Image 1 (cartoon, rainbow, N blue to C red):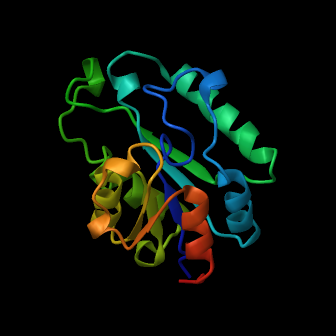
Image 2: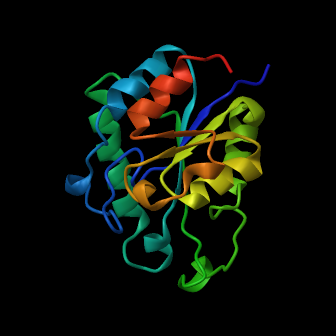
Length: 185
């Protein structure tokens, strides 16, 4: 039987917004995120990060720096007994360089490609899953994939009209608290 999952945007949602985050020492989790994810982990709910990474596509930083940042995020989560189950990143961008120059790649949010691939690879039920993010494109991505969507007011979330979201909350921790209180979906 397919399981529901939690899909999280990374920058501005899971970790504090840093423009083109590529240095591990700049990675800081949003308040309460690790503890809230630990509860999802205890319940056996898959936690999947889906992130546009235009900085890779534009040549601002490379996969090695992206990997180092993800390792640091994993370390910070582990300090609270939390983990993510998978991470998907899309480097494609209309202003990308070389192979990464692609105006509307199926994986680039707001397209749902990363969620669809995760659902296939991890046997997930998108109709019972949530996409949580701080931008309109995160909400649209979740909707296009058939998920429910939550807007957090961290990162760019304070500037986003939340009328299209199923849930609008101050932080990822608050979103997970609300979602987990009604789990299973």
